Image (tube, rainbow, N blue to C red; front, side, top):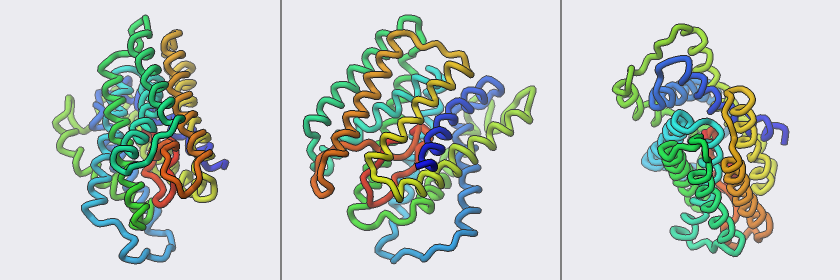
Length: 326
C-alpha cells in the first residue's frame, strides 16, 4: 500500500514539474514528452538489465505490432496531457484527464467488449459530463480554457485506448511483462516524437537562463514520476485488489491540485471546485461499482490504469486501476 501511495503522489508532481519547465524554458509539450520518454526508457532499460526474471512463454508475449500500438497511445496520452497543463493549468488538466479517462474506458468496454455499464456506470458517466460542463462553463475567471480542456480530453482518450488494449490482451493471456511493455511504450514515444519535437517552436533542446535548473527538472520527470513511480505501482498493484488501487490512485489528482495552489499559485474558483468534486465523485461511483461486481461478471465499474497523467500501462490480466497523466 505504501508503494501505491508514493506512486500516486509522484505522478501528481509530473504536471507541476512540467509547469515549472514551461516557465523556466522555451520547451514545448512535444519536446518535454520526448525527453520524458527518452529518459524514462534509459532508466527502465537499466532496471531490466539487472533484474532477474524468467522469460514468459511465447504465447504470453504481445506481438511487436501490439507493443507499437500501445506505445502510440501512450505517446498521445503523455503529449496531450502536457499540452493541457500548458494551456489550462495543472489542477484542471489533471482532474479532467483522470476524471474523463475512466468514463471513456467504461464506454469503450461497453461498446467493444460487451461489458454492461450498470446503474453505477451510467450515473458515473452523467456525473462526469456534468463535472466537465461545470468546469468549462462555470469557471468565471477564465482559469479553465477550452483549448486546454480539449487537450486533456484527448489525453484521456489516449489513456482509455491504452487501457482497453491492455484489458483485451490480458483476457487473451498475452499481456506480457508490464515493465517491458512500458519500456516499449517509452521507446516508441521517443522515436515518434523526435522529429516532431525538433520541428516544434524553438526545437528539441531547451534554452533558458538557468539551464542547470531545467536539466534537473527534466531528470526528475524521467526518473521519479516515470521510471520510479511505474516500478512502485507494479509492485504494489500486484498485491492489492484493483478497487483498492483505484481509491489510492486518487491521490494523484488531489496532490496535483494541492501543488497547483500552494506552489504554482493557481486559483480554484467555486466553479472549478464544484466541477472537480463532480468528476471525482463520478470516478468514485465507478470504483464502487467495480468493488461490488463479481470477478467473473462483465459489468464495467473500475477505472483505468496508466497514469496520469503520469500513470502507467495497466497491469495485464487484472481489472485496470485508476491512475494518470501523466
